[in-house]
Amino acid sequence: MLSQAEIDALLGAVADGSLPTEDQPPSISADGRIVKTYDFRRPAKFSNEQLRTLQAIHETVGRVAAARLSSFLRGSIVIQLAGTDQLIFDDYVTQLSLPTELVVMASSGLAGPFMMDVDLGFAQAAVDRLLGGPGRIPSERNEPTPIEADLIARVIGHLPHALNEGWSHLQTLDVSVTESALTPILLRIAAPAEVVAVMTYEVRFAGQTAPMTICYPYATLEPLLPRLAATMWYAQRRAASSNAGIREILENEVRSVEIPVAASFRAVDIPVEALTELRPGDVIRFDEHFDEPVLIAVSDQAQAWAIPGRVGDRVALRLVSPLQPMEA
Image (cartoon, rainbow, N blue to C red; front, side):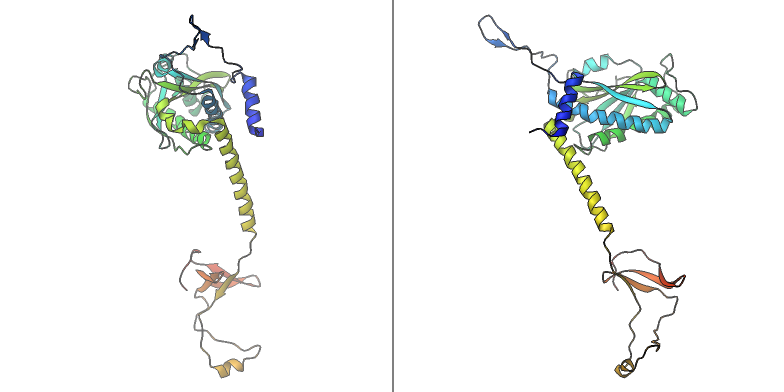
């Protein structure tokens, strides 16, 4: 039985056309054998289910990145996932509009690096916005100056956080930027014939649009491929939501628990005869001075030192050391 989340995902996939209806029937050879066409130049290593899971992950990446950049640039930015596909790395590089802002990223949770292409026009428009301009895409692609390159790096610095959050239901990545360049000549993160998964975004801001892509080599994602099944993805999302709800309930319950806190002076020795003669109004003298700290115990466990005093007409204690287990 499908959960409501899985049903919603299937309906969404049918609506946007990403869910195939029926596979084309294989052809039949002259001798009656079933023949299925396979392109060895462009092999399909990622299954449709894995690509749909990557699509779900990177829709979240786009929303988080848009929110962070909108706040940083103080303007409305929409980053929408436009397509998910698998290509040959050489074909992916060939379709790039150069020069462009190519960023190589790495993560301990992945088997290798991956690459993000941030359109240079958008990057320079972001710099213009940071410097007080309207944030318009320049008509020509020029190599950024050192100051512009530093500002572009600050803009790109928000993207690893979006990737971390998008992948968080499946894997903790801790993504970091390792290098960047304007052309892919020195950024060979994969063999030319290696299959890559490409996430294509449309960035909309100030009435303009610009592309942005994320390229994952097959070898980089290979250890995670078994976990990219849709059922596992939604199961982990439900588990994460459930754990968050349970944690909140437990925190609320714990906050309402009453814990005994007591302050105690040093012990004083008095004769038994004096103890038996004590009456209301009698004074027991301790060896401590009034401004010396007294011991605070939480649930009979010594935790801190405090100085006694008053707040209005009530006796009070002011902590002079942090609360932590200690020897009395």
